[in-house]
Amino acid sequence: MTDTAQEERAVTPPAPRPPRKGLFRRRRAQSGPDQNALIGHHKLTPYLLALPAVLMVLVLLAFPAMYASWGSLFATDSIGGEPFFVGLQHYIDLFTDPDFLWSINRTAIFVVGCLVVGMTLATTFAFALNKALGGLRFLRGLTILPYVVSGVAAAVMFRLLFNEDFGWVSRFLALFGIEDIGWFINPTLAMFVVIVAQVWTDLPLAILLILGGLQTVDPTLLDAADVDGASGWTRARKISLPLVTPQLVLATIWFSYSTLTALGVVLALTGGGPLGATRTLPVILYETAFRNFETHPALAIVVVVLVLNALLTLTYFMMGRRFDIGDS
Amino acid sequence: MAIETPTEKLRVEPPPRKRRSPLYYLRKVFVWVPLAALALWTIGPVLITISISLKTRGAVFADPGLIPADPTLDAYRDVITRPGFREAFLNSVLVGFGTALLTLVIAVPAAYAFARYRFRGRHLLLLFTFLPRLIPGLGLMVPLYRIAVAVGALDNRLTLIVVFTGTILPLAVWLLVGFIQQIPRDIEEAGNVDGTSFFQRIRYIVLPLAVPALFTIGVLAFREAWNEFDLVLALTRSTAARTLPYELFLITTGTGLANNPGQAAFAILTLLPFVFVYLRIEKYIVSGLTSGSSK
Image (tube, each protein chain N blue to C red):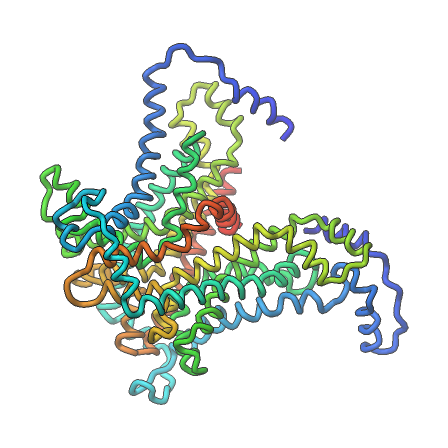
C-alpha cells in the first residue's frame, strides 16, 4: 500500500498552482478536464465512490445494533403501547429468569459441542485433503456442497437421516442391536443431532481455512523432518499443526460465531425441544420477539448475544496473538 | 522462492521403492479413511434426501434402500403445484438476483476507492471487515423488524434486497479491494496517457479484468440471499416476499402426518440454482471464501 502510494506520488506531476482566489476557485481548477485523467486527483472522488457502501453498512449494521442497545432500556405496558424508560430492568429480569439461564446453559453446551466436533472433523479432513492427490482432488470441490445448502434444508435432511423408522443412522445402529433410539425425544440425543447438523452446514469454511493454511506450509520443513526420521504423525503434530495455528484460531472464531447465532437449523430441526433441551439463545430470542411479541425484552437478548459474540471473538484474537508470539 | 525449486524437483522424482513396508500401507489408510469419511459425511445426507424424494410416502417405510425400487417424481410434482411454492421460488429468484446486482453496483465503486486512493477514512475498510462479525444477522432480526415496521417496509422484496446487500457488502468490498489491487496500476496509467476518462477506465480496464471476482461476489451475494432464513423470518409476513427457506420451514413445522418425500423434494429443489454453477464456481468460491475469511 505504501509502495503504491509513493509510486503514485512519484508519477503524479506537481499540479500547477491555481491563483488563490478562495476555495471555490481552487476546486474548479482541480476538477478541470485534464485533472480527471490522473488517478486520485479530485479530492472528493474516493469519498463519493465509497459513500454508498459505507452509508449502507452503517445504516443496516451499525444503526440497528445501537437501536437495540437503546431500545432495550425501555418497556411498554401493552403491545404497541407508549414506551417508557426502565433502565437495566430487562437485563435484571433476564438474568433472574430461570428460562433464560437455562438457555445460556444450552447455548454453552451447543457451542462447545459444535466447536469440539467441528474442529476435530475440520482438522482431520483438512489434513487428509492436503494429502489427496491426482484423481482425489475432486473431493476438494465436493467439500463445499453443504455451503450451498440452507440451514432449513439441512435440518430437513438430518431429520430424515435420524428418523427412527427409516433413518439410515438408526438402521445402521440396529445392525449392532441398538434399536428404538428416540433421537428427537431424548434431550441429550436431540442436542447431539442438532450439533451434528449445525457442524455439517458450517464445516466447509473451516476445512477450507485450515487447508489453505496447510498448503502454505513449507515442504522443505517436512522433508527435513522426514530425513531426521520423524513419523508422519509427528510431522503433522509438531510442524504442520503449529504452523496453521492462525487458521485454526480463525476456524474456531468462525464456528463460535456461527453456532452462537444459529437459528435456522435448531428451529427447523427441533424447535427448541424436547423439554427445552435445544432452547438456545437464538431460539429464545425468536420466541420472545415473534411469538410473544415482547420487543423490548427481545432487544435486551439481542444485546446479550452481541456482547457474548464480541467477547468470544476478542478472546480468540488474544489467544491467537499469544500463540503467534510464542511461536516466533 | 528460488531456493524451493530444486527441492520441488527432488520431490517430484522420489527414488523408486522396491519393497513397500506394511507401514506404507498403514500410512495410506490414515489418508484414505478420513477421505472416505469426508465423502460420506458431505454427500451422504444429500444422497439420502434425493433417494427419499424419489419415493412415495409409503415406499419410504417399505423400501428403505438407497436406490428406490420404483422411482417416481410425484413428490416433486406435489411440491411444485403446492400453493406458496411458486411465489416463494419467484421471490427467491428475484431477491437473489436483486441482491447480487445491488451488491456489485455498490461494492465496485467503494472497492475501487479503497484500493486505488489514499484518502482520509480509508481505514474504514478495517471497520468493514469487523462489523459483520460483530453484528450477525440474528442480532439484526428484531431491530430491523422494528425499523421496517416504523417505515412501512415490512413484507417487501425490495426491503430484503437492501438488507441482504447490507449484510454481504463488507465481504464483497473486501474481496474486491484485494482483487483490484492486483490489477496493475500501469494499465490504468497507460489509459490516462491515451486520454480515457475515469468512467472509461473503470468500464474498459478495471471491470473486464475483474470479471472472475465480480462473478464470485455475485454468486456469494446470491447464495446469501437465497439461503438466508433469520431475516426473512423477521421481515416477511406473507407470500408477497417470503422466500424458499421460510416456506420450507412452514412445511416442516406444519401439523399432521409428515410428508417425508415432499419435504425431501422441497429441500432438493432449493439446491437447484447451484447445480448449474457449482462446477464452474467451485474454484472461485474456494479462493474467494478462504481469502475473505483469513483476511
